[in-house]
Amino acid sequence: MTSAAPSLPDVSSLAIGILGGSGPQGGGLAVRFALAGHRVLVGSRSAERGRDAAAKLSGAGRLVEGGDNADVAEQADVVIVAVPWEGHGELLADLRKQLAGKIVIDCVNPMGFDKGGAFALPVEEGSAAQQAAAVLPDSTVVGAFHHVSAVLLMDESVASIDTDILVVGDDRPATDTVIALANRIPGMRGIYAGKLRNAGQVEALTANLISVNRRYKAHAGLRVTDV
Amino acid sequence: MTSAAPSLPDVSSLAIGILGGSGPQGGGLAVRFALAGHRVLVGSRSAERGRDAAAKLSGAGRLVEGGDNADVAEQADVVIVAVPWEGHGELLADLRKQLAGKIVIDCVNPMGFDKGGAFALPVEEGSAAQQAAAVLPDSTVVGAFHHVSAVLLMDESVASIDTDILVVGDDRPATDTVIALANRIPGMRGIYAGKLRNAGQVEALTANLISVNRRYKAHAGLRVTDV
Image (cartoon, chains in turn red, blue):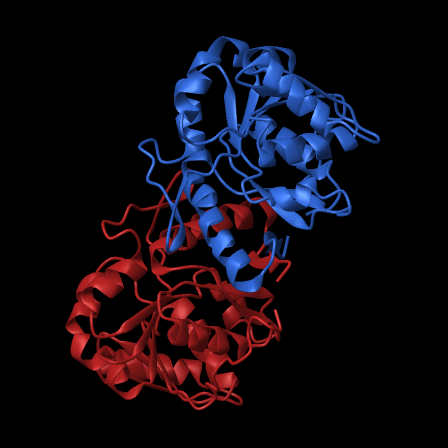
């Protein structure tokens, strides 16, 4: 591990925008990155909802700013996509200009639910991350943060999030940046886990972790062994 | 965990058949289950190849028997499918009679390789395990053992295989049996991870673990946290 990660970039000064920051996963990541010392901006469909979400997420030791998704995409250095799968592609296509030249971290899991539990939805492009890459040709898309439990992220009594973050992407500087960002949150560890064409199964595995959570009454995460 | 696994069955007397026992993954599982005290039979296309493989896998503290795939399927109580993806469906369809009434554990990963590394192949039925279920209507198919490193399994200096085994299937007694079997191998822990319709991403994730192995010079496995 030491020899394999010789030069992760210093990401401590990056401003992090979160599209869909009013949802539980986006909100939870906002809290954790703000606690880690980052400037964090959460976006929503309207500026008012974004500011409301930011006010709720701010608290002891952390300030979260809010606005509409376009403002947040424009102001942030790196943007996390935590919006619902429904409308994912259209929302990102509308932000192409604001997201140009930036690393876009997609953590969306295309899933359906029925009586049998959660299941992975087929995605024409192969995965949400690949769909993002298709509609954002001027950005560098990386997949990550798919499996983090929103419940744990939002629970202030949980000091350390005990999970690895599988990071998939085709651009080494971008995946290194996302690995370094994951490492900023206590307990988390970023692990390079392949190219963007292998993002679909990482997203879909969330359905399995939901089954794990139901069976074992857990908030399951993943650790990669031997790394 | 303790309350969630109140009554796993005693599987210690089950005879384990392994189709494709002359390959590295099948051979490695044969060695480990034989060391755990199971009667183990490895099958191959021809009885002679099966017997040759068995002779190579037998050794200190373990006896492995061999034969052709049909013989092995007939004699074993539980059958592990570790054959190449190419020909997987046809091979199983030919063994429908011998596998009737049995638990069939599919650990096959449909993958391709090119200059960019490993990638998941699309499967018409959704996954190798679902394909097995489609051609074996008289058997109970469970997916498991997809991510175990053949290198570690075959390395006698490795006493403990540090990984969880994600077990997917629709039949509770069958998945409990496979969880109990995984627990027989030192270091391994079986974890229920959803229904068979969520097998595809578990199989495909092997492509990501191959990327992890290349990047970090590792033999990566997975642990589920909070369970």
